[in-house]
Amino acid sequence: MSTWRNWAGTESATGVEVLRPRTTDEVAAAVKAAAEQGKKLKAVGSGHSFTGCSVPEQVMVRLDGLSAIQAADRTSGRVTVGAGTGLAKLNAGLASFDLAMANLGDIDKQTISGAVSTGTHGTGAKLGGLATQVVGLELVTADGSVLQCSAEENADVFAAARVSVGALGVITALTLQCVPAYLLRAQEMPLPLGEVLAGFDELADGNDHFEFYWFPHTDVALTKRNNRVSTGVGASPVSRIRGWVDDELLSNKVFELTNRLAVRRPALVPRINRLASRALSAREYVDASYKVFCSERNVVFRESEYAVPREQLVEVLGQLRAWIDRSGERFPFPIEVRVAAADDIWLSTAQGRATAYIAIHQYHRLDHGRYFTAFEQIVAAYGGRPHWGKLHTLAAPRFAELYPHFGDFLAVRDRLDPARTFANPYTRQVFGD
Image (tube, rainbow, N blue to C red; front, top):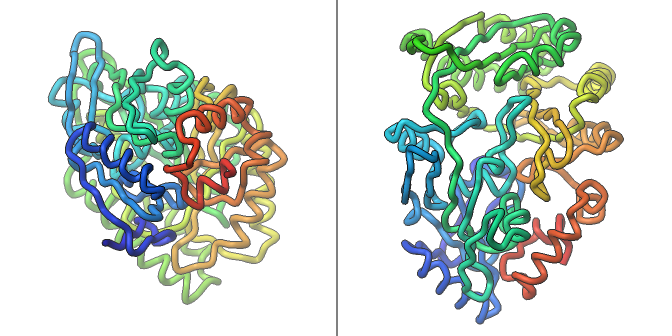
């Protein structure tokens, strides 16, 4: 028996049975045995979700034994990988085949199956989340069956299982559509928030990948533009000293200290944020795509992220800013804004609409309740869809309104897991019993 805890410390489980299968057949045997005994089973990745989506109730399956690239075809770009493979390991492995993911989020601590299943995404007006790069997957269902799923085989399961929050079974392998390895030119600079919002569409559409961070209580946004380089341009990465100062010292060590100061002296937060918004000065460099996308994030926080129709981003952010100004509260963490193309995955937050993502954060030693509640109330008027792995309070009836294929997803779940072997409190909240 073991105790499990997620990275943020928001969820934990004690006294669970831990299984570490090394093959798909062993996973299937474990699932079948649990189902026959009436036990609840959950596959657990790296624990980077803030919600309880992966909390095990009785049996926890660790997929560390399924953490390698199983097949790679340089010509087609198709790569099959074990579900327990961490993104950092996957990115390095793909580079050895001169391949890369077309888009990534900003950390690489998650497992590939966990990131896909919760709808993890990066940014890019013409690009979707990680799940859109999945062209096939292997799924172990409650009766121990192993389903091969793609657009051509078990197509309805494929539409449901790419973002399924672990509610349909245990994914044991995924086939990814990768691209030839590429370099990105990163351009990072602070700009006036008003300028960023006025030119938001041009910035989003005019760059391969665009995002910005706005520091509450300031008029400054840190913008990030990442674009593929022209043929013949080589890498010119950030120097080791500059990288350590910006990414480790300022973004982690000093940021931890300023957040601790914010706990003791909330009135100093506006001044701290103004200093922070100026501390990360403009920089430009060229490096391998995954090295540009992913950063170290060691300061513990709480996060809520909602997807809204892209055309309503400026209005939503304006309402959030107005609430922050009225609230009298102080928020030392920046607010992150990203974009994604519409996709057709049933429970993807970008399903059916071009999307903007707004992510709010609060240091883990500060209360986040009033802030997150206000944010949720604001985005509700715009059809906001919460990230499946980040904090929210929505339940099944609301999701039925937000997702046109929600009923289709529940029908697949009823067929694959009628006894709810893969259920836990979170899936009961978001999908019902």
